[in-house]
Image (cartoon, rainbow over all chains, first blue to last red):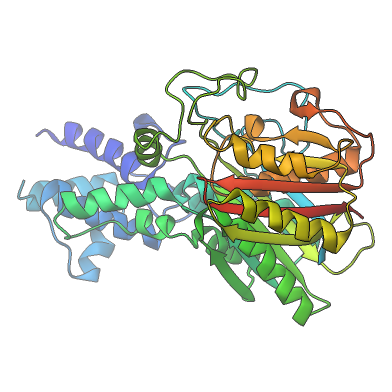
Length: 88
Length: 344
């Protein structure tokens, strides 16, 4: 899967999994931070939802919190991590 | 028993923040779904995770919480089903992912006490917090709980609510069990089809219960619940209420729901009352759901505070007095309740 296609798919999954009903995929910039007021404004419960998303959709298990902090930053970092580690 | 100082209702009709019931919306596919407000003041991250029952419960309670400040001595909610839609999503995930990794959101929102818990969170309230889930008596037991709390803690106030939502899955189950009519129903022919089944409804009603009569909207004088299929038991319960409080009912607010299997209960109660009692109905406004008596209580407060009954709600015009309202409801032919409300 091309990176651009993966990013588009991720944005749709983010909206679905996190119930971001007031957003469309095109509203989410590739480098917009997931957490904090400057980006999507997600919180710790959302990070759990994202970890479940990675497990279900891409067969990736994140067990080390340090990895989670590096990966769950924005669409760019998440897509790169998925491309390297996906099992499905 | 206690006074109602504030009351709010989010329902399938225009009831929030102000009521306008002279024009009604018809059911769509035999469902009366709530009109949801914009929920200003609810944190967006919290709002997007809330199930519908939690959203409307919090939405109805927020004006009361804001008006009361942080001084609320307890939160008491009645809900038969809680966040049923999210419960189904959660259970589907359990099956689909073979009890493996499951997202927390739907589980958190699906528990029956999610509304009371979210109200506690948004108001930073760490006091008494309880949810009653006894199907068609869930709201009545919340009222009784509040009355008992106020008897023990005279200077307290309690946020009391009744909330239930229509869920797709539960609607289907109840439809298969003949609780809803197969043919389309309008507000106009809600009571006249003479067939089994009703129309699904949902709403959230929140009120502030206190012992303070000053500026109160109404007083809840008595609440009686009984489980029975015997009309004689219901008649006896009513006779006891009338004997205890004086036979001075002005308005009988009937829980008739268009299901002809239960008309005999309502007719029997009507026949026990004086001829000059006005008979009014409310289920064509909010639909049928387990905590519909919370809507009836809101409607009773509306009648008492405006001294006006919308024409569509009147079944039989009696005296023009607006002092004592008796609510009677039967849920699925077994769970009966009476709530006596008096002008304050």
